[in-house]
Image 1 (cartoon, rainbow, N blue to C red):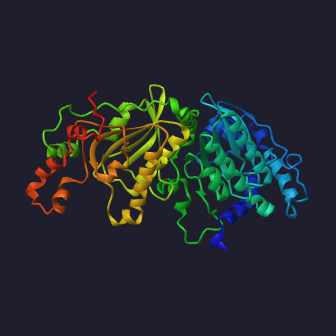
Image 2 (cartoon, rainbow, N blue to C red; image 1 turned 30 degrees about the vertical axis):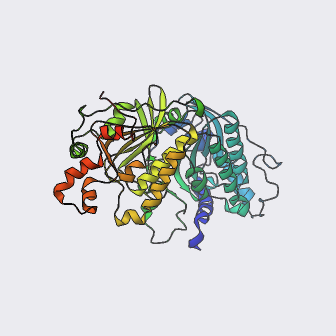
Image 3 (cartoon, rainbow, N blue to C red; image 1 turned 180 degrees about the vertical axis):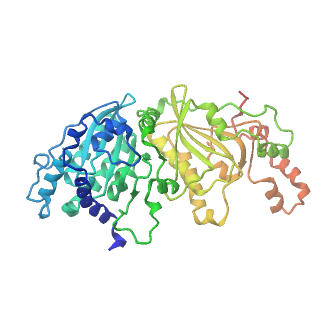
Length: 498
């Protein structure tokens, strides 16, 4: 039973959610206990807010969206007693959930302003049958996505769900297809989607609303995973099903404390903005050089300068270039590479996406994260800046098993097919294909303290069976200095210092 039970977890937790709600005390509706939702901003990490408290915790103002009638019946009603399966007691369970929460479904949809940006917000009420997704939930979510599309608005999902509603069987499970389609339509329209993973986010809610979002934030300690707590293998590592575990595995972008969530969402919504016109888009300007202005006299001299420990690295360039920025993390395939920084920054009132190598050998997860960043920027119409600085792609056995070749190939494809302009600056080592994968084909600049080579001079000498003493000569023959690259037509220019 456990082997295929990921959504079963959500189903079981949907039933458990009703019991969780009863433990709240007198069953008074949430809106009567806290009509303004003011408790939301001062809760402990992972405290289970009501749907409206969660909205109030992040929004400047909000109004509830009109609730669709769905399939010809009134909200909260069903086309048949006890739902499509005739599940005994289902109507009574929903009635108790309505009395306890003041809601007539597991999700509240609202039009909100967050940092002055109009936004469609989807907020789950976990105490309503475990925040489970049923047909009525699907109706509301579809209407909310459609409204966002028709008005060009981003969608922010505040998720707290155990998964699909067991009492509606397959009719509930198929709502995941509806949600996935609506998310894909909004993605195709170039509209940002952000998710906040509350506690818990499991089952189909994680696999659609959560994992499909462009930017995924989570509250500390939140339970996050496809498998809910009641269907996991008994020997499963519990940390794998937490927000922190998912961050380490490259599945989410950040764990954000509750007191910083509103500001973080505001920054993301400002950065991702509204769809742009590709034809009118100006490329990002290359950053100014932060190192010494003198060009190297020899090829080996260029190598030594680029490998110097005190040379300015990606962090220094990002800090000098952007007024503010937010980063994404992970390749969504189980990996994180700390040697690459990806995200979106604000420069002189304009958003620019960035992917920056940090001077280490880039791992497959790093290439996949960069490709993910470029594709997201392409979809949202945001120009890209890449900072190239790596001795090359990681070539150990773990990197090969993780698909180094496929990851590099995918990065080449993303960078060479994107519709948005890409600007690249070589800020240090340019080691072979691992560096070229992040270099724009026709818009590459270099700093004076950098080099770019088909292969490291030491390796070239070894392959050619030359004596170690010939490494310096080999470096000169490879023509790897910035001025050599300019003569060869590989770069557009050498950027001056600030």
